[in-house]
Length: 65
Image 1 (cartoon, rainbow, N blue to C red):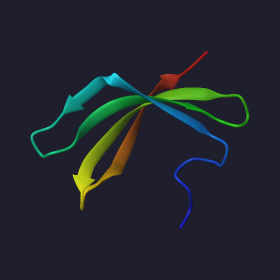
Image 2 (image 1 turned 45 degrees about the vertical axis):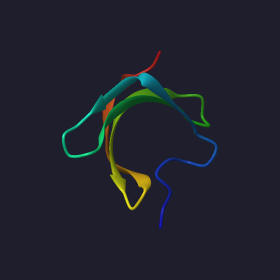
Image 3 (image 1 turned 60 degrees about the horizontal axis):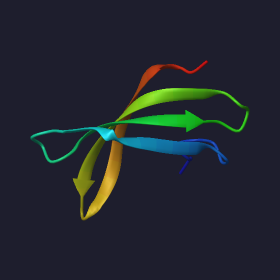
């Protein structure tokens, strides 16, 4: 199985952006800082499954400057 992000990537989710869905999951905004110095902000679509959170999809919101 491959990793979702490269090793050494920092992921910082912003709890203030959490938007719950009626399906039991929701969307949260997160900033990813990659080992090569680039960064981007993504929307992370999540669902709770078997007592754990599972990422279903990420949606690019734009590259950071």
